[in-house]
Image (cartoon, rainbow, N blue to C red):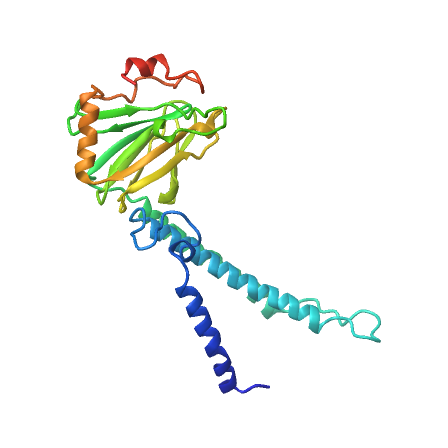
Length: 300
């Protein structure tokens, strides 16, 4: 049987190899192949690291449990296999109380531990800002999005908005993303997005932000975060909401504060001001037919 010193010397090159392998990993690999990360840049939001950390840690723990379980299964299959010349059944045991307790307590500890860290991180992600820098109302409709940038007046008369229509693929199935609804957000600002639905259940999902929130009639949700990297991101509805659910797409642009102010000014110049949350219930247009008459009246 090898001595402890030999085992230590054998483990040393293995540890070095693991460290070298991890050092060569890209940001995507280090974060469990999740989106939201780029080489040499910050994560997409202040919450993205927290979500990826929970994801990667969970997989590491589960993989360790799997390796131990597979090793025990292999050990039992080899050590207690039927040998040549053996006949009949092996000695039968009714139960082993210490092992039964062990098999009950260890999974319970793992489950409670994963529940604790998940509940802790979710509570932090769901914590709203007391005074957000930017408050946006995202309104889901079959099958597109409206975005209202709320103002400071009590009647919201200084709010500005943009209305969108769903994706219209061409004959080859390609989608012109420049024509999709676009949500513009300033970088490094406290953002709260209030989520509303005009018709059925939808789900607001910005893929690189690693989080999504459901939207229901009669129950408004909200999501608070800080965009931390300028760039373009993809968004979509993540709840099956009808025939054209797959075309309920939108863009997200995280820009500088100056560009954000310029964008709001461009909406004011178009006359897109005031509160539109109750303008109409459904989009009412279908792929290939163009914007609805309601959207045309609103200046789309």
